[in-house]
Image (cartoon, rainbow, N blue to C red; front, top):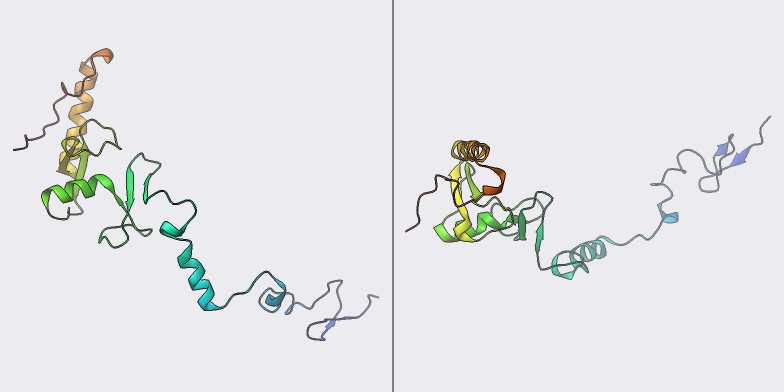
Length: 162
């Protein structure tokens, strides 16, 4: 026969070898025993203080994602992602044409270097135009010898800027 124990928190009889009953052993019931517990105001204050320029690892709001694209921190921008970042090449084009890009408009990098966001390297096109552009570039690359790859020789179908 097992010894009868009592829960130190609520006094219920425990017939197992545990120190607390099932209801008291849950973290919610014994929260005072786990870590620091802050008020709602201090949690909000702490959450705001470690974001953005207050964070110890802040690098100016600019970083390169795993796809090689440069993102800029602009939480007030209408098309920013959930973390407040916007693709830099879209910003450069939008500033030059003076309007926001539509969702179906893409920005193509002419030299195919994703972090080269100079205006002369960017070209706005629709999704079908972009697919056609890459298809013709692939075909031209197959025709050219590997040593002669020169992006100026590959026609991108880009209209001249005036």
